[in-house]
Image (cartoon, rainbow over the protein chains, first blue to last red):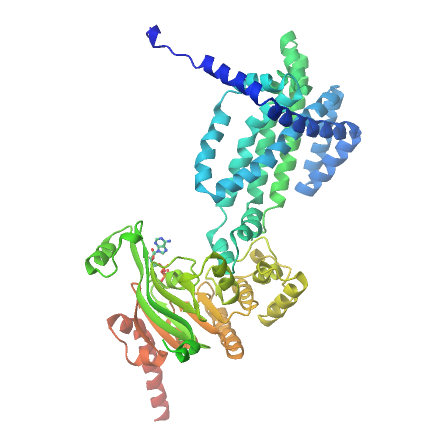
Length: 283
Length: 288
Ligand SMILES: Nc1ncnc2c1ncn2[C@@H]1O[C@H](COP(=O)(O)OP(=O)(O)OP(=O)(O)O)[C@@H](O)[C@H]1O
Ligand SMILES: [Mg+2]
């Protein structure tokens, strides 16, 4: 046995720190909470207000615009019907609003951070281990503090989802900017581009396909979190899966699970198509 | 340096060095031994070595040398795309090495423009926007930008292609875009790094002729890098032959052809001389 007197526990101090933060930064957490809640409620209102056929129409238009393939468009249009037939439409809309909120926040934070990483090796060296941490840390570990800081509900669910889904968009923004060819950058510099102009006119536009690929992955990661996030009040399809597990109702679990997959497939195709559309023309 | 000389020369370079090494500060350029060590080392490169020259206003000055002789490094130093290790560069009376960031940006916008071997066009912009790029950086209004760009698109024979993307053009056409993009800024000095190397011989010939034509009408000073002797002879008023970072001979094409300074230059011009001699022999035979 490992000698017991060598044991030292960090659990206690960590709990203390969390409690201290909870007391001292209440206003800060409330601020985050209300910001996210506002966005979430707004998106939720919009999404709930849309009639069901509007979703089909939107999917149809986007699918056609991004893929230009009749078959893909028809398949993507038909898939939402399955969710509706299972009677899970309302829950799917809730899930969609949680995911969209997480993705919007991830983009708003992730793209600028990715740009900073690409601009400065120093920032990159600091951020990279953080991203590794965010991706490898089991999500249950931060569910608890999220719960403590923000209570039970959709806000902590969104935050836990963000922690998990933020890294890809940061990484791929950074990568995309760094992959812009030196030839083009040098030419732009030789015509007197400032650092900001180089970023705005050359690096970011040329990195957009990569950034969109990051957004795509971020969305997928967010979807992967729906079941876990529902444990702290995310609601939606995730909660349906969770309830089915508790009741050992395999059939209901399957219906909810398939619905999540359908959401994933549709969003994946649409965002991937979008990334392709943005690629500069090649031979 | 007298005023008169300053006015006559568009580019003046004195004792320019560029050493690619991890610890450039520690190298003493006056110590032959250290330089030798640099040269022998695999990691460090003496790319430009104590080079001094001047280019007169309106002159086409050609730098020629084999691959790796330091031509690109030299031309990039002129715009400080690579930072010279030591030496002075004076272009249009501007002390290039001592410009601060803002002045350098201004200098690059107004005083010199560069044409690249691999074109360096923006793949996500149309021909029109590519040509107008330099003007956009200077915050010139869209209307004027496009008007001036269209003028040069016409001039290089790309009318009708202004909405194409670079990927949809042939190499020759892409380089025309590159040239138009440079000239639209009205630069007093044009820097060209092997601009025609990637083109097939016939198109290359056309482009050389067009460049000569443009140069004759604009009287732009051109600093032209090539590894092709024929090209250098056709275009150059004066030529420099570069070897291992140094100019081994500077003179008019005829001078260099007639009187190569050393073995290296002689080998460079050998083929050309043989061809000329053959042509002369044929001529004398024909007249006899
Ligand atoms: N960024 C760099 N870092 C280290 N070494 C470099 C760098 N750029 C160029 N060099 C070295 O400097 C030397 C001169 O290179 P340069 O590109 O100037 O030659 P060049 O005459 O233009 O050749 P080419 O005809 O192939 O274009 C080469 O040995 C090259 O390896
Ligand atoms: Mg070169």
